[in-house]
Length: 153
Ligand SMILES: [Zn+2]
Image 1: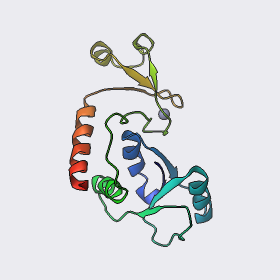
Image 2 (image 1 turned 60 degrees about the vertical axis):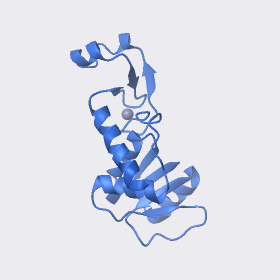
Image 3 (image 1 turned 90 degrees about the vertical axis):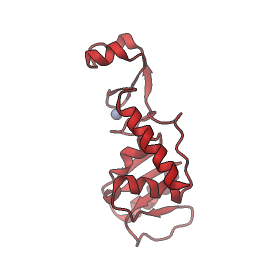
Image 4 (image 1 turned 180 degrees about the vertical axis):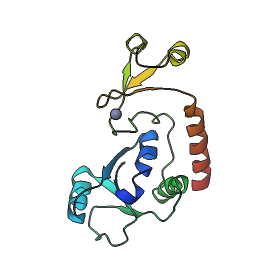
């Protein structure tokens, strides 16, 4: 399942990426090119715009919630998505690229010393070079996702 998000719900992209979904921004251009991009890449449109034309082959979810967690819950509920913890943290939250594994020996100068000392597994974004690891925020995210799952059911 892939997404394209319009500007007003753009912050949601980061969360969808954390959950492992391919989520692109649509920030520029006319509605027509949004439709074209959604069709071409088979993306679900997430937006606040009620006036997007209904187009065959495109699913549009109009988000009504204001808060980011409620928006995410709304998407999960609307599309009947159950977050899969195995897919989480497989994408760069900045540029949406799929993360690749990188050997611990290659990240020594790129992460804080305490992280290097305590973590075994690292991932790298092939686009921007950002290094990811199973840090303390991991627990919080799983917590939030569990709550979202409860909201959705
Ligand atoms: Zn990146």
